[in-house]
Amino acid sequence: MLVLHLAIINIPEREYIFDEYHYVRQAQSLLSGSKITLWHPPLGVYLIASGMALFGDRGVGWRFSSVVFGVLSIWVLYLLVSRSTRSRSIALFSSTLYAFDSLTFVQSSVAMLDVFFVFFMLLGFLFYWRNNRSLAFIMMALSTLCKLVGAAGFGVLIVMMLFDHEKPKDLLKMGAVYVLSVAVPFWVFLLAQGVHVDPFSTLAGMASDILFFPAAASKFSSQPWDWLANQKPITYYLGWTTRPRYRVWYRGVGNPMIWLLIVPSVFGLIYDYVRHRKKFSLFYLIWFVMVYLPWYPVGLLSLRPLFVFYFLPAVPAVTVSIPIGFANISQLIGQRLTRIGMSIYLIVVLAFFIAEFPIRL
Image 1 (cartoon, helix red, strand yellow):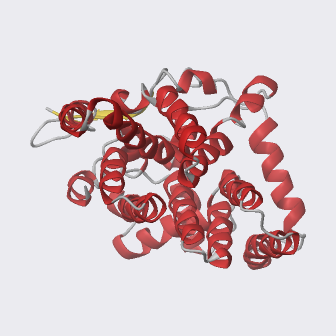
Image 2 (cartoon, rainbow, N blue to C red):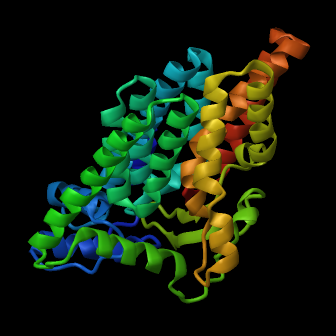
């Protein structure tokens, strides 16, 4: 997967892909020592700027950090699933699906913030399953410092601790770790920018703007219920290479063979937990619910347009739930038929991934 990313990382070299226009310009301001206008917490912009410091103000520099964090996310997901399910086969299957999801690949190929907050969210979940609560909540703070919606990961951990019947003082302690890990670095950044206000009011203002500030209408906007059917893909960039001449088409769209199984796989998690009381099924169900369902009231009550790539943090939960579903099916039809079905399924997933690859002959 790293090889595929590196093959296209500098295409296009001097043109922005979708929202790169905003975040690369912010990174340029950071590198020049100028103040930046904040729409989101700044950690993701710093990570983009680090790639630019290494490889210059061009495509490879803009996108290098996204590629690194996107590829590392696949590895972290494998470790997380292996630890939580105690099954290397489920871990390998789920991380493979995640790697070949078209939206995941594209978001890991462009200089936007989403791949960063998802990486830290995954890392936080891994530390939770390794029983390191402090590091888990610190990682969720880093996720939030990349993009405020990373706070959903904090909510997942709190809900899981409640299901674990952990003591109230432990909940308060971890809440304090999270809040301080968000507030202190953000406050330091504000001071470095010459802004002398408390970090909480600034973060609250960001959250209000993200959720309720009317933005320009877009033909690519969609509602959360559209995402389940993989509707309204977004054209991030459309152009041509020279020498040789290839079509370049970056699209924000999920792999249909994965996304069409969103609803069945979620019901599969419910079945698995109700029938077998497996903690990991409950965890992945809560993960999906916490990062996806809050967009429904936002979509219904807010004037702000929403986009399909907001579903990105839910994709890993879906790619884990699919092999869990196959494991349950194997109890009904046997392992041999299940393995044949899984092999055919993976081949079709790969075919759709190739069809959506950004560089096209």
